[in-house]
Length: 169
Image (cartoon, rainbow, N blue to C red; front, side):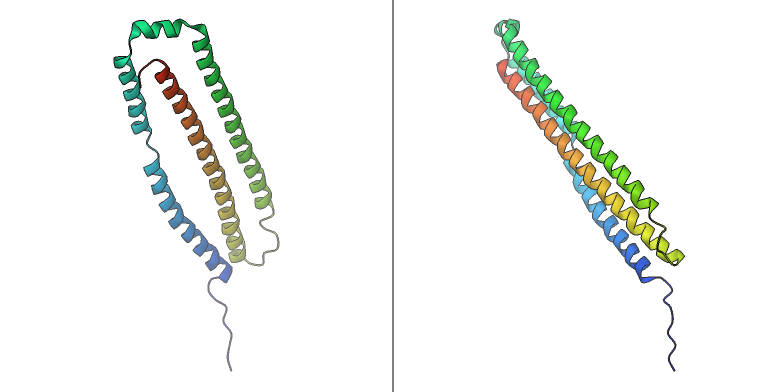
């Protein structure tokens, strides 16, 4: 006669814990990659170096005549305004994505306790749901970081172009 025993942990709970463990391992690796890619101090030093180089190389008597030209100044600031408007639009898209994710997360969490038959099943469902929510927020943040990188590149290109217009860089 064989008696069937119930496992100590619900298999769904074991799976949910494994999913979280895998996610945490991958997130740690991704965080290290991201931290190595973000170099604000290095970027600031590079921009400052470019500005100093231009300041040293520029013939300021000649440059002042370029600066006095209203079309040059207007063109540069018009381009900067376009970049800023695009940046604000990208930031607004990011905020909207986060709000949509927050709303969807609330909907998922409100349905969480339904159709579960044990505390372990509820915990498993809660872990899986929260992991899915976290992954969506992470996707939103990744998209936002990509947008911020593109915005930074546009500002750098504008700065480089205008430094060159002064006759330096």
